[in-house]
Length: 123
Image 1 (tube, rainbow, N blue to C red):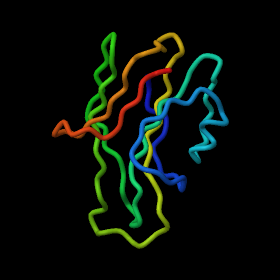
Image 2: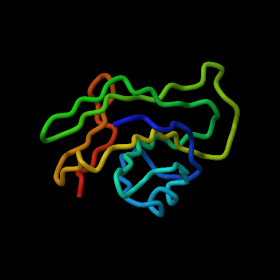
Image 3: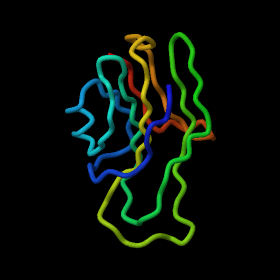
Image 4: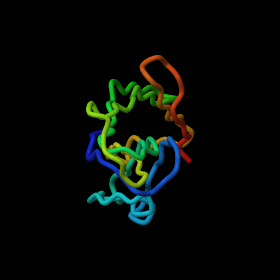
């Protein structure tokens, strides 16, 4: 697994972790990336929404075992308070080889204080 991209998207919603298996799903999130879906899939952590510029995600740790993937992450606000902006969410996109895809694996995202942010189960 490798982090491919971080950024922002105007596609609104709350905190969520999304598994993308094709270009249409990725595009629906407002993200462009050259994934090769024949051999890999994407996992996107979306956080927000925010109406001030400058928020970004910090991923502290990723731990995986046979039944779950646990991501420790949080958002850092802008040091200067940011500027008003239309609502957006931050994202981190990981590219994962299809060889490690296992149905039923739980993917959970928590804060460094272990508060839940988002979770999903690989379909």
